[in-house]
Image 1 (spheres, rainbow, N blue to C red):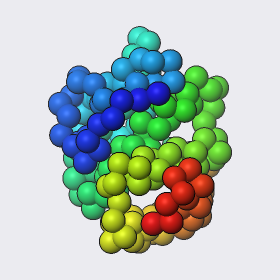
Image 2: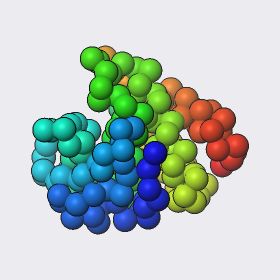
Image 3: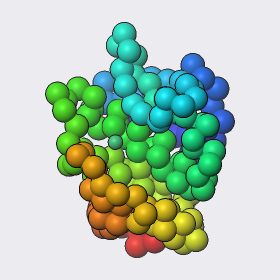
Image 4: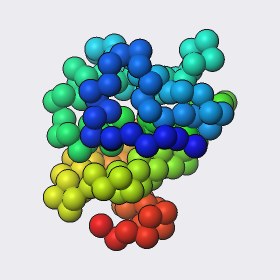
Length: 151
Ligand SMILES: [Zn+2]
């Protein structure tokens, strides 16, 4: 489904290059870097990409910025961009997979997890995202099931 990548270096990948991941159809997921546009996943001319808004991500703790980018990569891995609409369910799945990838690749110490949790508990919900505390608890529980790691 995806190739391994040094997750911590995702933000260092140059714009236009591959993120090191392939989507559910086996297509390379590219990275773009449009400052101020937000960090999001999309498909343009059949090419999946994640826009990494380094201008806003650089203001966040690194563990949060990594999780945000992997959340967007996860939408591609899970085929969400093929759906007519992304709902709270898909958002929760992307939250879970992002956290699981960080655990699987060993990029999640207890201190980093606490930093992520502290950040997320301050985020309000919206039409497609549960409030931060619920997102964090859902992702923790779900990633425990996926990875068997109680960290
Ligand atoms: Zn999302």
